[in-house]
Amino acid sequence: MEKYDAVIVHFGEIWLKGRNRSRFIKILLDNIEHALNHAHSAGAAGKVQAKSSSRKSSYKISMEYDRVIVYFSKKSKKSDFKAALERLSSVFGISWFAPCIICENRLDKIIESANAFPGIKDAVIRLEAHRSYKNLDFDSRGIVSYFLENAEMLKFSLDSKAGKTLHINPTEKGCFLFLDKILGAGGLPVGSSGKAVILLSGGIDSPVAAYYAMKRGLKPIYLHAHAFSDNKEAKRSEKMKELGSVLRKYSSPSKIYFIPSHLFQTAAMGIPKKYEHVLFKRFLLEAAAEIAQSEGAKAIASGESLGQVSSQTLQNLIASDPGTGLLLIRPLIGMDKQEIINKAKQINTFEYSILKYKDVCSIIVRDPATNIKKELIDRLYKNLNLQSILSKTLKKSLVAEF
Image 1: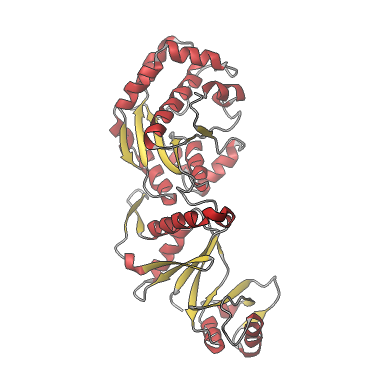
Image 2: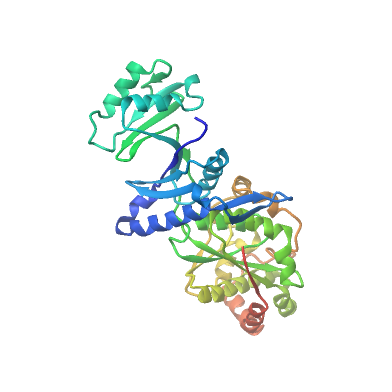
């Protein structure tokens, strides 16, 4: 068998959604369609860029029973199957998926198709049959019995410890056969939980926070503060291009707001340096709240881990909270640095996060205060007229596609 006929896609958590299930499934179907119909090609620097596929007709997506079936046309190539599996692995909301072949609901055809699986003859195979379509003259037990009696070329077993499992699933549209399941990304479909403004620095933590926010169904709108003299310099930087290309694998293209940090830094020159890091975080959260209001987002997500650095002590997190009424999400709050680094490496953001860059994710302060009162930050924010500085900063923003 040089290629498969389809990919079976199953989802897990969506089944808990009761009457809202159909809405989640509709979003998942849209996300699968977008992922499959937008190719990702590597550039000279290893960059992954999304572009419309020239072979959209290679895929047909259908919701059948309790799963999604991605059918391939007869013109599909091996590369189409490989690309589809890679893209499906990055779609949140999928529990597992498996490439499959489809044959007639006849026992002789089923065993003939089983023989066609590449590599199946070299392993002991466990059988697992489930007959979804009841109007057949054989049941699940009949399938297993037939295989054990007639599959002379294959080594079948009922032992749960067998190396591979051949799943046999007769349905009304034919019999689907597939080997071991491929673990999906899990979570909820991106967009099913609404929108969130995500503070995206050039560091290691915030891209991982963005990943986890998307996994819980949030559609990202990114906010990036930089130290360049021009927004376009930040947009053109290798780091931001590469981070964008990786994060885009998990979502359709999103907006990103580039804002300069120099207006804040000029305004804050007169205050004690030990307060600047927390005041700046307050400034960013206020900016995120303004953007959220204009974009219809109801949450802000950031990459803090409790106690990791001075601005992330419990008291300083309280002090930086602007109290906008929006939900403030910190997906990494209970993770230590090594856990975050490991995840960054797994999702391929780490190598780009450590590139040199004019970063303002953490203002370097000697002897930073770790127990700042919220009342002090509120007073500094008001006395420095930072709300006016924020308005000017947002007017200088550059909105791009990420």
